[in-house]
Length: 70
Length: 138
Image (cartoon, rainbow over all chains, first blue to last red; front, side, top):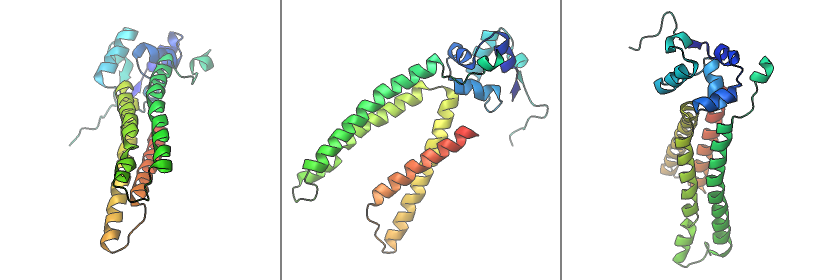
């Protein structure tokens, strides 16, 4: 899933490691989130939302035609 | 500026998690090495004493400490790292299951493989390492 995490992080002048420490995750995880390789579980998504004071849907951009499981 | 913000340095949290794991893992590994060396040198595993069976399984006790360290590490890491680690372990488990079934069929056919347990162990570890590397690079 695409997201604005990198833009938000850089806007605050934070390294991936600094963001990772504030979210309580690894730098590897922040990198995976920023590159869209990993979609966070809801508790982490809410922590990100709270940290940047923005709703989840303003940070994460769902695909236009999301796959619906059969 | 941007280049500095894209630093690949580990975070403080990463270092703390890694340190905690090392502190738990290496004493277990050291104890395993000491017990294993003692058993191989003085256990008389090729003798006739019934105690040799006890000495033979003695290194498993410190190995359990290593398992404990890994399980505690799994609880300590975050959700994405846990996903990668468990995918790696899943790959290793699948490979060791295939290896053990293969060896079992060979044995049914009358082909006895010496050190079969170590072959299965090696296959499982290799499967873990390869799967872990592949999923980590995706």
